[in-house]
Image 1 (cartoon, rainbow, N blue to C red):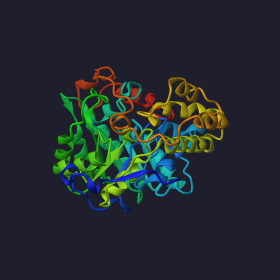
Image 2 (cartoon, rainbow, N blue to C red):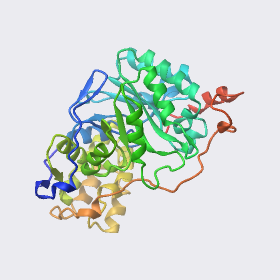
Image 3 (cartoon, rainbow, N blue to C red):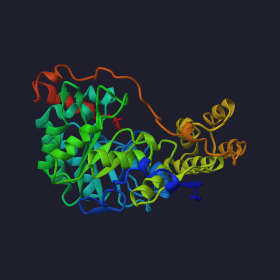
Image 4 (cartoon, one colour):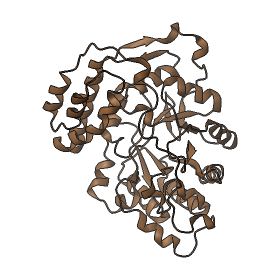
Length: 398
């Protein structure tokens, strides 16, 4: 990937850039020079996007969430999602599941087939199609089930580090993260990541970084990673300074901005360089992303349909006409994309704040969709366990 236009932030006021920088992050036997993890995002963090982000920076790049049952059943879609390019190391896969036996079988498959160097379990997804089956951010409420899943997965993983990612809880009245984190620590996980929102908050408002600090005060034997509202390298350093967390997990902040991982690498290694790409450099990244998607899907038409959702994120803040944006969002071939991008002014400078800040879905707080009677007890009751296994039909949970 070509070198981006960057600015040296050493000229900025030192007070504006936090100095806290954790040491290299160790997750089991995996040591990362930069304590940064790409958050799994459904339909986003496939091989193509992971490779693109890796070309700009450093860290651990996790697959999109894959349903355990689909993997156990060896569905073609799930097998595609666990594929890694030869340049991807360590190989990191996130699983979603609600049944301890199925999750353990999925982990066993990944280990036996040598498909992963790191496995993460998702207990943070707030999407209704996941929580209505008791999965994602709903599951830790059933603490016994949570413990059973994690203990079984850790055992199945053997020497492969297994980690968990979770939210604060279902809502402000049903917080689960401290109890769940203690259970996960006791089960032998290699790290714990917290998105500092509840399921009810979805992606709205502001992440509660104080919860990350509280988790760090509670968990001592494994790294604690913070997630939520990291839109810049400065945000990441500030989170570490304010919470004491051992590393950061970055999700929506990198949508249309894979070079953010370069900023993060520089910041955590003591540098103060910030990518400020020209429109031409953004276009180059967009084209590269599309080409990598073609390689991933082995289908140019499907890849070009998939890249459409990235148009608004890449060109946020830049002067790109509505007709051209719309045309890119309808493009169906790499040649067509190249022709459209050629109409842009490659020298158009970085627009500053207009290209930064929040991106991706935010929404508004909402009442989580849960199985009937889910909140009545912390343990599974009646037919709830059998109903749970029906919630693993999709390939990707989020």
